[in-house]
Length: 384
Image (cartoon, rainbow, N blue to C red; front, side, top):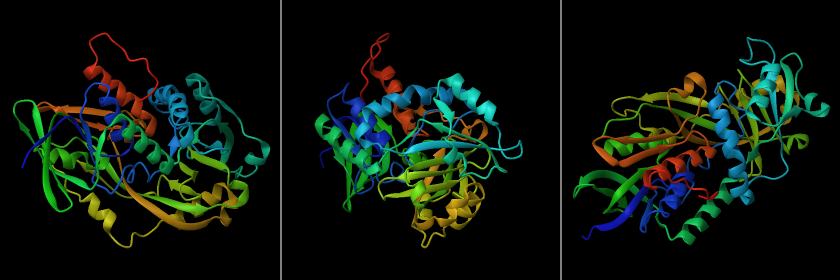
């Protein structure tokens, strides 16, 4: 069987994998994406709250907040047609040190420090909240992306750039051949196939370490959660409202455009199980997602949310989406969201890439540019 050669192979067809492939096309001719699922952006790029961060989430990580502030206008401009329209976004700061790690004054000061627009919410919004639990409510500038529209946009961009996309391609092994070349073995349609390239990018998010294990490489320390995003119908006065309650309870009610409902997450009840990858990966994450039925915690999310916003008593649960959420362990300590851009010394042409939020993609693209641009040159384009 002939071994098909590429300049670069991107494993994983989520948003990050697609953007990495598009960027690589600026430096090389033959780029292919291998995606395990039936299409692009079907896993973590879809199963999340769709928040485009503007810094507000990170009063305990100034660097993360500043990166979001830099990346937010770029993402909003570049993917304008993929964003939810007409939703007002609010952050409620809980009352008392036992409830919140920051108070209202600290939150406003933090926003001003990083240049994130913030104003006191209108009275009709403040009146939605329980004054015994909430100190202040702020109107902020954030957006929500529509994962279906973003999928369509990425498919078009890849087609225009002549990036080859191979779906239903499950990578099972990687090995160095011919010096710097890497052969990638995968299963597709019941058949075993292989391709090779001088550069391979592992953009598989929760499967990052499974791909490294397939190459015989040690795991990167990562924390995973089996996460539930509950979907609810909200009363009419909340239909164009996004609410985040912080910075202890940390729950969010956000529009979920692909289904015409709202998503609800809660710092306590969204994670159903968590584990660390250290040494050898031991948990079958894919198996957890296949377990039926997965038991929802939405009733607990709603009961707690109703303590803060009484009118959520009229919200109706309509279902849940489930995914494995993955972060760097340090993020659990300081709430930061740095990117992962890691090479293994024994296979330096294999790069593992991960971002904790969608706007991180520009930080990844910056790292790719550093790899391929001549020393001292800087890209000035605003696109992928």
